[in-house]
Image 1: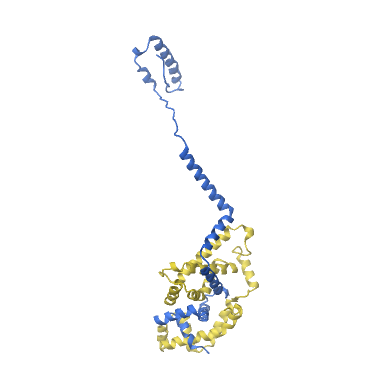
Image 2: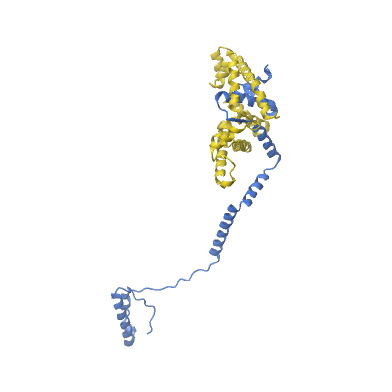
Length: 173
Length: 196
């Protein structure tokens, strides 16, 4: 014979209780393991009728979840952090990659901050036309001859398209 | 389904009442196990996925805002857990794979057919008992439980169809469930080893 005292569990499952009954039902389910198991079996009946069951029912699942939760509540969450840290230490590959990346970053950073500013040699390219504009009065005839013969010789080279410009750095007066 | 009742249990679980969360686990365990089975063929792995999904739900219950139904939220957690499991299996070197862990479903099925470990019951057996008892019920009880479970009707709708008070509907559905439960209980208790 069915115990009418359990009728509320059936109505609770169907969401057919008044708000006051529902609050009481929630409290009773929270405190009475047998009421919870009955709720589970009523749900199972509906699932079976709708074909919503897995091939194999695992009847220990609810109690295993319960035990796990009780364990978690009684042990601090620090446990998980340590586990994760141990996972990293235990597996060398991700640790090696992380260490390598860190070392590279440090080396690049040090190199940037410690290197001296570069000295760039300045070379002035002067087109050949500019050289012709040097005033003749500023140089004597001997020097003029030297320069002109140098330029003529290099102009020949330029005509063979080997040297487009003459590089003039300095000359003695 | 049962959204208001779930909300009540969720509120209590958020306040730290483990018993309220246990009720949600009792209610949804088979559906979650079936859902996990769609992604993970290995039986032990499927159970691990279902268990982990519930644990994750407990750890994060305070973040559940109630925008969706609890089952929808739990559904999403289970799918994510199953996907993570599959990704972890793929990352593992081949020689460390447990036999049949998502690698060869046909082997899993063969393995599953060989034995039913303690704590497990064939769903076929349960379904057969449920259908048998329903066929033996009086017409009033059979119609009431069928309209409720298969058509998803409210007590008010069923009362209208059956031309009886809502209280009578409530009582009929309860008696139908009790009749089925009476036949199921011995099998479930035997398999669970009389868990307390």
